Every structure is written in C-alpha cells, then in structure tokens.
Image 1 (cartoon, helix red, strand yellow):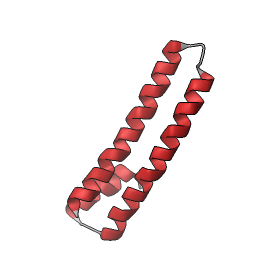
Image 2 (cartoon, one colour):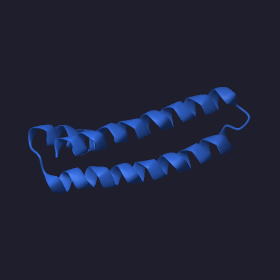
Image 3 (cartoon, rainbow, N blue to C red):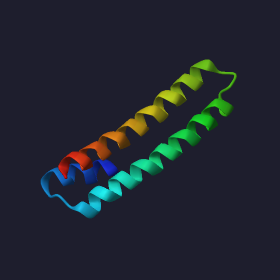
Image 4 (cartoon, one colour):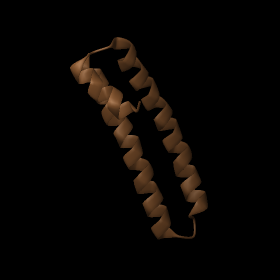
Length: 76
C-alpha cells in the first residue's frame, strides 16, 4: 500500500511497526524530493513555466509524505 493508506489505517488500528515504517519512508521521500529538485532545475533550466510546474508537483508529493508521517506520529 501507499504511505497515505498506511497512515489512515493507523487511525483505526495502531501498529508501531507500520508507524515506524511510514516515518522511514518519509525520510526516503525527502531524499527523492531533493534529487527531483536538482533534476527539474537541470531539465527545465530554460523554461521557467515548466520548472515552476515540476517544482510544484515535487513539493506537493513531498508534503503528502510529510502528512502521512505526521499522522503516524500522532497516532502513537
């Protein structure tokens, strides 16, 4: 399942192992986000509009992981 699905499941049925996995996954997403930023800048250096879209998409995906991680912490 996804981090989102796992986080929502924690609200109904807490599982410490799942909560820890979500937090670890968030760290991995943060690292991917940094790589995505570098790639977007390189790929769309001459296209400000495209760069803006790519950065917005990457940031929103990173924020979804942050929200799932926050649910895992609060469910504990």
